[in-house]
Amino acid sequence: MKITLKRTPEQIELVKAMASRNRTVAYEAQVALAEFIGPVLAEVINNAPTLSNLFTTLQFNADDNPSIPLDLYYDINDEDYVKVYSQSHAGGLPTNQVLPTASEMKIATYGLDTAVSFDRRYAAKSRMDVVSKTFSRAAQEILAKQETTSASLIMGSLQDAETAGQDHVRATAAGANFVLDDLNKMMTLAKRINTSFLGGTAATGGGRGITDLIVSPETVEMLRAIAYNPINTNTGPVGGTGTDGIAAPDELRMSVYNTAGLPEFYGISIMEILELGPNKRFTKLFSGAHGGVTFNSAADDLVIGLDRSRESLIRAVAVDEDSGGEFNLIADDQYSIRQQKIGYFGSIEEGRMVLDNRALTATIIDAA
Image (cartoon, rainbow, N blue to C red; front, side, top):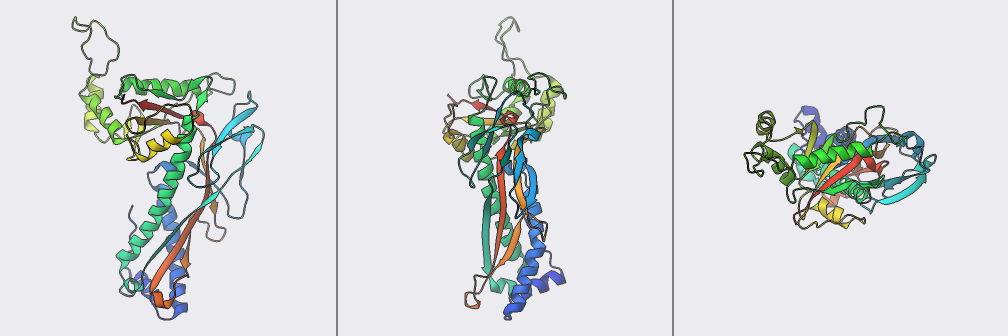
């Protein structure tokens, strides 16, 4: 992520004004820059390719008490209660709330804050690079907090996910390898747990099942290996031995070979994140979540399947009535002239929840 302020005459004069010895002029310049850069930061945060932006945004007024009528979001009307996963504070343990389908669910929101500052002399010298990197750091801090909060919620929901007696988390068939057969079974499982309100085929034909895969670099390596490794899982009379490996069709192998970055595979978008993998941050969150899934975060890996066609992952965010923006950036007035600092304080009020964990499936790559 990189935010750049151009060296236009207007922006140079504005930055210089922040270093003015006249406190009124300096503060007004700080406020003007905050009003200009605040919406830009909000757009950068909302468009970053991160786990937190897999959530559907639901905006509400900053002074409002947001709620969701569950009967409009959850179509399983043959059950009296539904499970909703949410957090009471940022990064907290996901709480499973069992609520009636006809109830109005209040959304628990929390604030995500950041505070940054730089030396006044950089403004006096029109160091636009320093000012730009300061705001980039503010956006990065908010994104880091959003990532941890989102991962905690998703991992906790997966640990407890079960539909009609079927666990949403399964292990690979080939041990430490994630092969085409595992992806095929994930797609079938996602179809089975995504039923209509009568428990049968939905009007859309059962839905796509999985639209996105969230994987580690090691899993992407295994998918790339389909270009040259055998993919068969059933033994048969191949070459008279019954054990020879069968390669994928040439067209599939060439498509994998030509798109080594794998933005898409089998019609499913691939989201590669470094936080997944053995002994990584998100796998540790999955291992630490309270649930019935056995997982060794020191050696095992995790492949997460998500159906984004369902309105399951919801992010409620407050919108400022005056500016209409989600990210509230204000000039920090804690610094005096003697400290020679210029600071900014930014915050977002939001709340995240999983309304329907049928949109989540996972496969454990068992190193054992």
